[in-house]
Image (cartoon, rainbow, N blue to C red; front, side, top):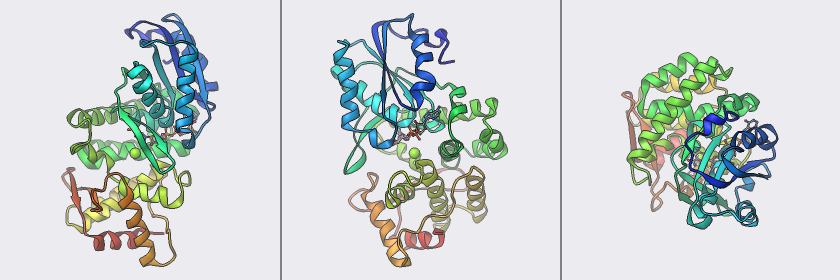
Length: 345
Ligand code: NAD
Ligand code: MG
């Protein structure tokens, strides 16, 4: 599909385009995309960045600007982000900045990017002192999900993407959660019809939430279900130890337990969600960050307080209930400690 010229019908005309990708995805798909775009743009350049979260950096961003300027690219130049969330976030931010904004298209090639990061217009790079700290809200002209590209993705990355698919169920669509439950094995073996539905429904839900609250002044925060615990796991273990989706999967189990402790969610629903996350190939027990239980819970609390979502040190969590509705509320530290203690391996 990304190699069909018709996929790109209707994009505004420009003399130049730049495909930004990385050294893993580029060799697999860049030439095919370049060829499909060749008839529409005078020149289609390709920039391959190194692969990895560590390259979502100022230095990589500058490489995009170097490429654009050295080819004398004008304000109509279109950027194509070909890759996972790292390439998508960085390319989107480059597009937001170059000449105060040039059009860009997302061509996500990971499940996580197809169901989450390519939709919604959050773009960013990392700062040595914090992930995603430098960025902009900037919407892509179009998002093109070619499901066939997922066939080259490692199984562990598929599971990580499934965490973000599962996330949409408990926060607002229990029918979708049931559908995932019935189709999980099909999704894991990349059954085309199951994947197509999961990607479409995920994007619909995300677009509906973002459409009501683009700048995350309220509702959009529900998309962070499982992420407060998840970010603590990622930061506590050191980025790259667990994939983001793995940390979010485990984080959803903890957030569900917290919801249960507050009387919002039944034990049966917590167990069901935990089982589903396990079946998706994701961890359900949180890693111990300190041997001593009290020190361990304190470490988690400290890490969660640094997270962008906390305000004035008060921890707020996305909780869910039996009716499939989200609740964004502060929770006393003592309860959070209990849940961490019970949920750690
Ligand atoms: P990623 O971009 O690092 O991709 C994961 C790995 O898969 C990489 O090694 C990549 O090269 C490889 N890969 C990508 N497509 C492939 C393919 N088709 N075949 C083989 N290998 C392939 O990670 P990700 O999980 O896609 O994205 C994570 C990033 O997304 C993080 O930086 C996170 O902050 C960001 N994110 C952003 C948003 C948002 O709203 N903007 C939301 C969620 C996550
Ligand atoms: Mg996420």
